[in-house]
Length: 298
Length: 175
Image (cartoon, rainbow over all chains, first blue to last red; front, top):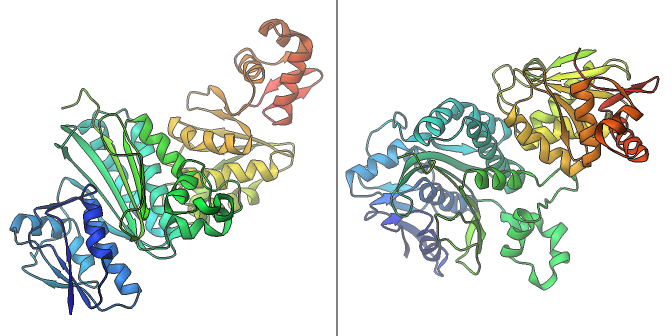
């Protein structure tokens, strides 16, 4: 018996819960991720899809099927973004996989890249700095100081995987025009892992303090708002606060989804909710960061 | 004075390929490298950030936070070549641990980083711009009561961001 998981036609952070609901629905058997009708996928959607495959693999499940988008351009983008290269070991791919190199697209600042150990964080940050500087200052019209903070935020988000997830994850960075609301260029960082999530990571040190309130949402609140960490070292827990400060300075957006909850720092240009609870369960943690162009920049 | 180039320490302790101070593991290794280079307790150790492009908060915590927590009451540290992005990583670390440190930017201007009360910050700024001064000169210059000025200078001295000799206070600086 095959269970079908629908990949939304427009697959991004807004439709992710729809994907998660289909993923977490009851039913056994081999899973088929159906993306044949997908018209567009953001880096957030793609790293989330890899995370689903990774979670099944790590749980010892049968290698799921994945039907690739029928639209040739969409499938090409999935190839250029590095998705297909990383999906191949996790999914049995069906459909026409384009033969494209995972490099050379000027909008893709960082192809989908695995993050497992601290060295991977160095690789990600080192790879992206020069291009990020050009795009942030010239394309997005931000001050030069935005560049270093961008590297810091990227580094801290990736380190959360290394330090807390208990398994590997993925990161991707892309620039594109945010037509939906903003009508401006943005840089988007998507980070996702199939690890233990915030609740399990913090349970030993924080659950008692929250009592009956302890949940995925409470764990996100503890980490994002109160800056707590599972480590006793008082210097820990500053990374997410640093990301918040950086994005706040440049009117950016931060959203963190873990388990069944999502917490967001919502700028004026967006209409997301600050906290969404009782969402469909999804493995690990997904982080979305968006840095928009300066208002005067086209 | 002992001058410690962070890029050199990074290359020696971690990897010659890396150019950025990111991750806790890197910070831990770099801190160990710095500790091995420290001279006498009374010397000022100048940690040169001038060749470092990027530093994240985790690495700043491991290097500067832990170095000051463990050795800051016994040694003098000055951070040289610090730019705005370094400050963004350093300030939250210093605030969280209630620490302070002197930073010198590429023009040689001194700045007090960390969370110290306003009178102490103003006293430091006066010493940094006008040179060494006695307690009464600080009190008059900043319109502070003598006890208030004494407390401000004592705070700076305890954080080892000024030196005191013969009743005169001097901001820590490179040369």
